[in-house]
Length: 224
Image 1 (spheres, helix red, strand yellow):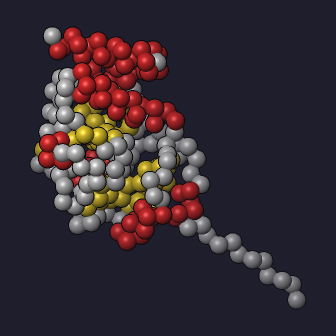
Image 2: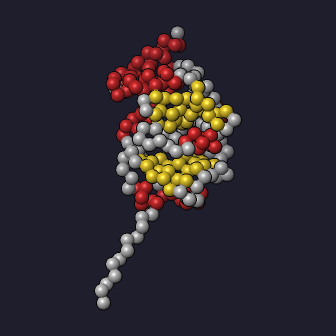
Image 3: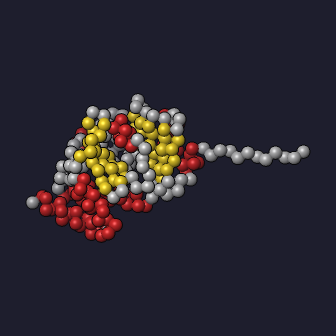
């Protein structure tokens, strides 16, 4: 009797996500909220991975070095600003934000408490279900156009969203459950989309150290 060939077991979502190459993304339809939370538990703060969930659709993204360079540099710019201008700003990095009632979850590339920093105080462990959302979330979109990203952040109630895409940073303010693109940041009105774009585009040309020095000199000039 001829032995029957063994059929290969289809890879699970966890296995498929684990095998994503740098800069790649994968979208899964018809994913339940429970399955999304299970994947979050399986990928406990994984380096170089972001997951978003919106009304049954899960997208996993593996981050490239270029993506992380820009995301971390934006955090450095905000650190330089709060030290030079003496602003109280709390950073919570890529903290997973989710709302079960709205079937929405997202990990930003960076997020900051500015107007509500005093309400957060010195706490380092927040609960998005009861605590206010961060005043600013950052989305660096280099290799993949994140589907429904504005809808996701709007559902999460993020007041201000910065999107860096194709060499340009845009600022979006939440108004009546949708975003309106503006030039000036509401949370940090000394910053404009043009200024942030300029310094982010200096990074690959002048390097991190020189660009931070230039940003600090600019901060000093507006402080006078």
